[in-house]
Image 1 (cartoon, rainbow, N blue to C red):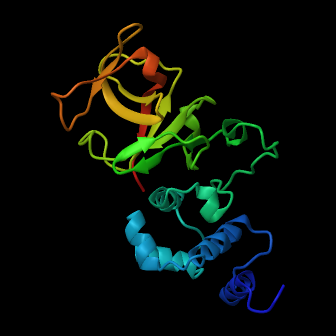
Image 2 (image 1 turned 30 degrees about the vertical axis):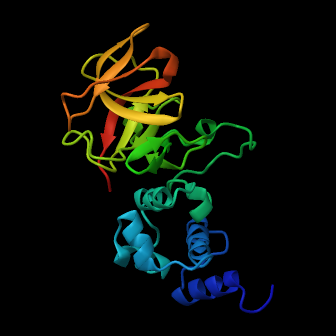
Image 3 (image 1 turned 90 degrees about the vertical axis):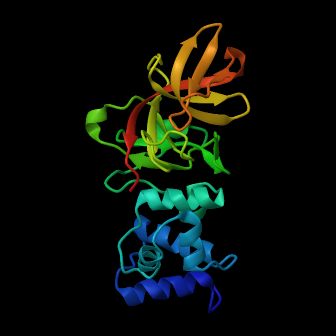
Amino acid sequence: MQNGAPCEKIAETYAKNGIFRMHDPIEQQRRNFIAWLTHPKKSMLSVATKAGISEAGLRQYKNGNTRDLKLENKLKIAEAYGLPIEEIFGAVKPSGHTPARTAPEESAQQTQSPHTAPVFGRAERGRLFMTTYPVGYIEVTAQMALTGDIFAVRMPNTDMMPRIRMREILLADPNDPVGAGDEAVVVDTDGEIHIMRCFENSPGRGFTGGCYADPVQKITIADANITKIARVVNILING
């Protein structure tokens, strides 16, 4: 490798901080983040502002003064730039879990820890669209006894205030029946994710729901235009 290469400079920084370890995945994520910042160059202020997180905390992470960045904040950065979290940080898994070695074609749900849920969805101008692969993983308690089908999405707007705040993480179970009064995640055939309170959900009549911010408005999605309906089983307060 030539002198002055980005990876060399990053390695030198960690050596000075006294915390660089060659096979440390947490440090590797930080190195990936720094490399992403430099191509093209991005300021700490611009990234923090765009993602809605603390610039000081982000700077502490970049400089190696903190061990790791919260998974919530990594997800915010990935969402803000419309990128998979792995493109910025590399493989990101919650600490304390050792990922199993799997073939590339295996689904993301097969590779996740029993105590994590995959987060799907790309936010665009207050709307949320389904992604083919998870944008990250959210750590959950063991007591929740998650099934392999449960997934998570992040609330992209204030439509469900005050019950659900913007950027809070919702866990949704497609195997749990959705009835009147339940909050639900509905994915339509265009890939848009709708987060609504259910008014009616019945075969032949489709799904009719609304939001708390505008209780008068009702939205109906026909059966033929629905690819997935999942009941919101938990709301994780944004960290």
